[in-house]
Image (cartoon, rainbow, N blue to C red):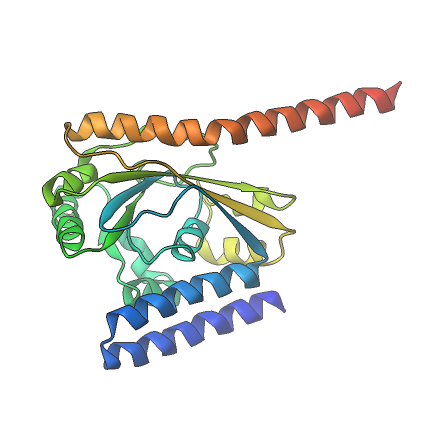
Length: 253
């Protein structure tokens, strides 16, 4: 039943975007997209927790990447544009939703496409948008990110806007269902997630980093900030595992 409600919500989202495109009211479209993300999280049974201050003004947000659910998490909090892999545009329903919401695309491994994406991001930032990129280049099972690539951070330098680090993590009995990496495919993952127990998503926002250093330096700084924001989460997880182990030992005596 939950999956049916989610699919209907996606179809309604397409219809709403089509009508909004005719009206040409960017502010209203952004607000409706944000509300759509919030409703989607509710239907999946995912609770959202925000740690830190949402940035104001144009900026490049760099985040670790665990799942396509990251889009819902961030999009439910902020009016942003995302950079996504080009394959997403062809996903059933979701691709049209993403495109209608202003998503920018890049063909991974294609230098020309990467340069075009860099220009697109810089133009969006210069026009006052907030853009989210995942500099790992792929989703992982976390919790700590792999190396942040610096190429896309050059867009913030060109536009003269700060870089804002963001750390995402998932918790609760259904957290294992949130991860989307490796050989997962979108449809089957969405189906599993719709049957998952409670999931709590945590979005931690760090302090802006001025773009007065080379992109590679900024990438290292941003990754260090993200890892620092994730450290309490990792420590909490280790403590939970340790307590579970202790309880197991107690019950076996």
